[in-house]
Structures are given as C-alpha cells and as structure tokens.
Image 1: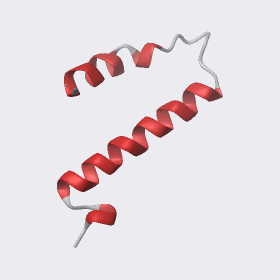
Image 2: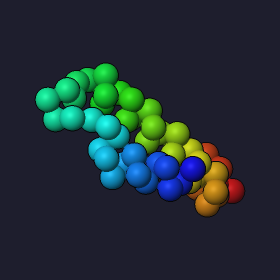
Image 3: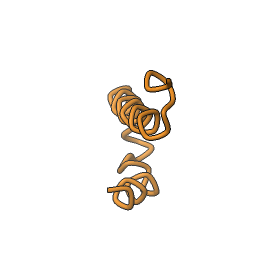
Image 4: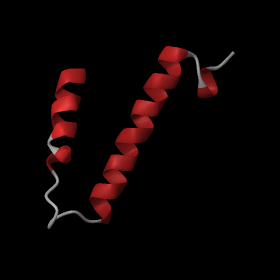
Length: 50
C-alpha cells in the first residue's frame, strides 16, 4: 500500500497542471487527513496520545 501511495505521490496524484481545481485540493486534503490519523494511531500522537 505504501509503495502504491508513494508512486501516486511521485506522479503528483495523477494531477496535470492544466486540470487541477478545487476538487483536487479537497481530495488531497482528505487523503492527508486520513494519513495523519494513521500516523497518529501508529505513533500514539494526536487523539491517540496517552
């Protein structure tokens, strides 16, 4: 999964400069939030801090 996400990131999440709009910004913000939740859970940070 991580390798696939890295490849997608390396490809700028399949975004082409002429086609990027606010919908893509919202999608990337959503992805970032999900990844933050995973990292917080894995490292005991954020809402998972004790």
